[in-house]
Image (cartoon, rainbow, N blue to C red):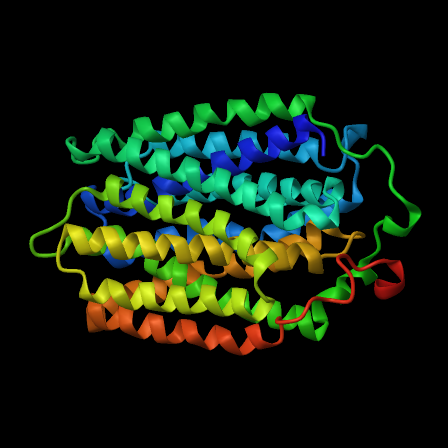
Length: 400
């Protein structure tokens, strides 16, 4: 892989981590501070994140059309970055308490742009990465995202802690400005100028998505993703509502993301040393235990421990799922099929709404315990993923 390409991929994943750091840790509390109720804030956040669930729609366009001769990936990445920055600037300028609908629309635009550049980036990663390097590359990319999320969460937390989130718009301006880095790097990246005839676009390649192993992978992603996102996006609210409240949300978010870095680095090592069954089982059990553990948090010390463990589990499972999705994707529709696999983890935005409403009815401890038990259901599809597919990528003979 060319160094220019790797720099682009790492910068895009880092930018995504920075934006997620703000959205997951501060955006909901910012809306609540501006007078929005928790259910309404959760609804807006869920709707805003829906483009992630449908980001696969950008895949066929990128796979099929070489935009104005500039390529199948790079021009779409640039357009996505522009839309993302426009949405972030819009969020900075709109008061959610005064105009919640416009605020939500700006959030949708920002996430839509992120979805486009993320989908096309992943397609390009598949285009230029050798199969034997996929776990290593995915480990690097997720580590880049988690490190950026860690530093961003910590920086935003220190910045906003003593101002009652009054400076939240400035954090959004910062995220928009950081988008300049991948935009410039995209100018120097290169993608394959020609394709092997066997990799030419055809809709029949989508048949890979209905293979039994693919269905199991989708089920695994839906279960673990829905639960983990529902828990994570509500953790900051839980900590601030404890008695006494824990207000160092930025520091706790950074600790969680340190855990994600550790999990993303450990998974590729385990991938080499352990069986797939053990790698899958370890990730699922760790995620379940770390979620249930939130229900017994009593203060800052226990919050630090359980949030770090929760981060390790998420980093492990995210890197694992991306690796499994990469090897199951079609070379013919690389962006489309990989995005379809990854989209199921983004359908987990529904978990945010379900979790928030469960908290209203049952309180945080019981909801954490139920979520941890539901996570164990992902062991069922994981059983079908314990063996590798017949090949790293489906070739023409398998999808024609």
